[in-house]
Image (cartoon, rainbow, N blue to C red):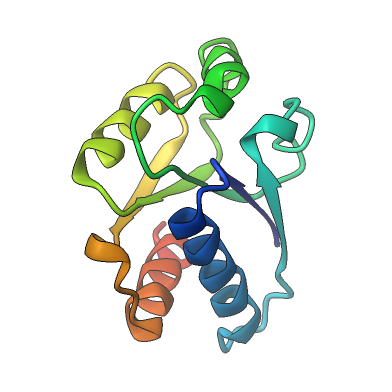
Length: 134
């Protein structure tokens, strides 16, 4: 399974993305998972096409690094793809839901790490939910 993690590269979200990547590599599964972190400012669209599952995370709504990502998501159909969204702020979760609306990706779960506090067990539960959500 190929997984793409798109981030705004703020410290809190970078930390969460690394935790998600680590958890993906440690989940007991018969599925081989290859996870790649992609800063939104480097995202060009082609990275998402081979991904079976993708995550998008940002600290604040509408980060400037998400301009191209927002534009691309309004023009691509990702109806067969599962997506997980994550942030440290509830407003950002709402924002991420809104930018994914047009692409029709299946938002299979969201993860809010309030105050940047992260429990590895919570991240693993979040990821398993996404992988096993049929």
